[in-house]
Amino acid sequence: MRHSRRTFIRLCTAAAAGVSLTQGFSPLVHEIFAVVLNGTRPPVLWLQGQACTGCTVTLLNSVQPSVADLLLKIISLDYQPTVMAAEGEQAWEFLLETARASQGRYVLAIEGSIPVNWEGRTCVIAEHGGHHITMLEAVRQLAPGAAVTLALGTCAAYGGIPAARGSQTGAMGVNALLRQYNIHAPVINVPGCPPHPEWIVGSLLLALQAIDAGMLDTFLKLRLDTAGRISWFYPNVHINCPYLPDFERGHYCKTMNDKQGCRFVLGCKGPRSACTAWKTGWNGHVNWCIANATCIGCTSPAFPDGTSPFYANPEVLW
Ligand code: SF4
Ligand code: SF4
Image (tube, rainbow, N blue to C red; front, side, top):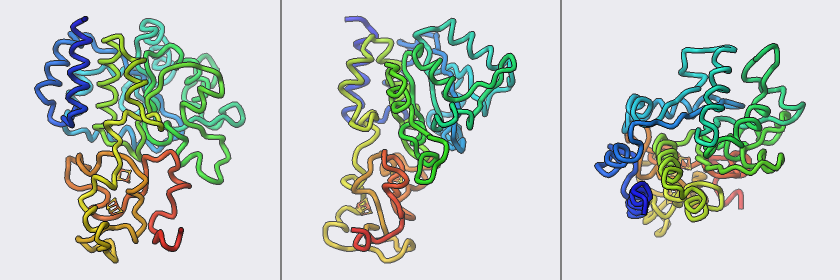
């Protein structure tokens, strides 16, 4: 068995046992970085479509690993509109050259949904030789050559807010778009509005290791849930919630200020949602959604239309 394959299987075993893949860079992860990546960092090309840039901000908030470690030691983020110094045609030419030079090996990271109405002209992301490059054109051009595409955030995964009721642009998530254009390419959804940095980094790390071990197809078949997410990062919120005992004995809080009691009657969507925020917390593990409010189901393919109104008593709704 190839060494990288053995290492990848160990990583999967650790994840299955509940060992955090990214928090604090466990010794196992350190070892894997050192052995498998072996000094070569795969290029990551990051495109932004219809988005609020929240997924970029959440990645920049990564505490463990720090964003410096992530960018300097783990990946080579070769194109990222918010953080790169280059801009304009020069930047786009660099992206195309990187994609050409690393055909079949680069990771395509997509933030934001992709509009298809009016041939995608509501979202122009670059200009090259007098030609406006739409997000639609860029994704169609770059996804087939990527080793894997990460659909970062609920907008890229399922359409999200830009595709909500009333949308005029024909906003779509990556998988739906590729299906529409009959493009077969591996995609991992990393939903959340925004996704936690651990889900982004963890999904990227596992994808890189699976590619290196020559096991990407098998891994995706085994580990993607029905919503296209790596299941380890998306367990059910409700059954892991510290308020579950309160839910079971019917102890509900009446206002967001109550520190005790389940938030179900305030509209909590935890029973139909999936993530690890109950374990990872947000903002450097300071708190999490349900500690001060309710779950709004931001990782759900149905978000936001199917999970709103966010703060309505379900007895009124159902
Ligand atoms: S607060 Fe929400 S997720 Fe937690 S037990 Fe109550 S309904 Fe479930
Ligand atoms: S707990 Fe709910 S609102 Fe918070 S990140 Fe998870 S799915 Fe989104």
